[in-house]
Every structure is written in structure tokens, then in C-alpha cells.
Length: 73
Image (cartoon, rainbow, N blue to C red; front, side, top):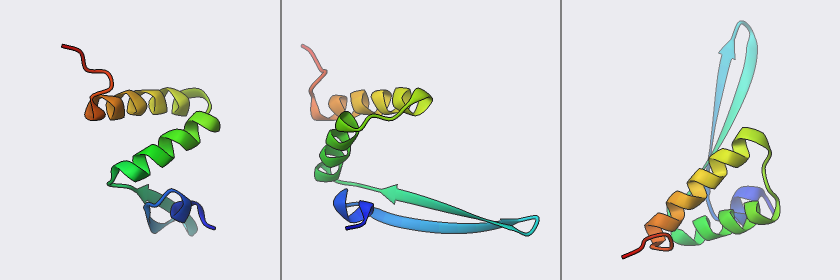
């Protein structure tokens, strides 16, 4: 099973040629809560490192705000 199917996201690819070298970019785009929950559970079990981890933690907190987890009266 490919990762984008596991995460239930759409996968977009782009190629760019610079000075004769080809660069590939892969973007996973998700738009529903089911995908968000899968991504959150995945990265909680298999954490990222360094600045990507800090970025993930910010994203995680924002997702909690959208769900009302971190909101108080």
C-alpha cells in the first residue's frame, strides 16, 4: 500500500528542470478530519526530527484548536 492511500490523502507531483537536473516534488494534500487523525496518529507514533518536529507540533496544536480541544471558556 502506498503512503498516500494509507493516509487517505491526494498526492500531487511536479518536476522541475534546473541546469539540466530534474527535481521531483511530491505533495500530499488532505482535507478531512479522518486524514488529519491518521496523520496525527502516525507522527505521534513515528516522530519527525529537528525543525520538522517543531513544525509538526505547531500544526498539531492548530488542529486541536479547530476541534475545540485546546479551547477554554
